[in-house]
Image (cartoon, rainbow, N blue to C red; front, side, top):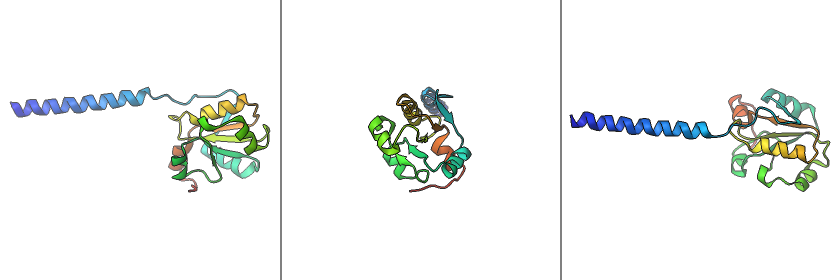
Length: 145
């Protein structure tokens, strides 16, 4: 009798833990479906842009520690909260330069915020790899360290 009561309590504790974890995960915001003035691209379209747009600046909006563990080849690391108009202008040379932003994926809002900010600063050719780094890794595309 005591053993079954104890086992029942353990099961309830485990269920409560999983329910709480699901609520926390479900509450995490999702990146927007679209951003005005920004073109959303897939991993394959990202590769096409890298190959066919020599002026493209690829911006990894993740934390430096994440970037250091691997990133898309040629990407520069600028955390969205650290990105300034002056820094972006210095990097690009002008608002006509095409930019492509990415971060960890749809549960990461850093690249969406950075892309929206670039629109406000007058950049005209902005791409956003919404599915981001996790999708890139899933597809086993080239990684630079």
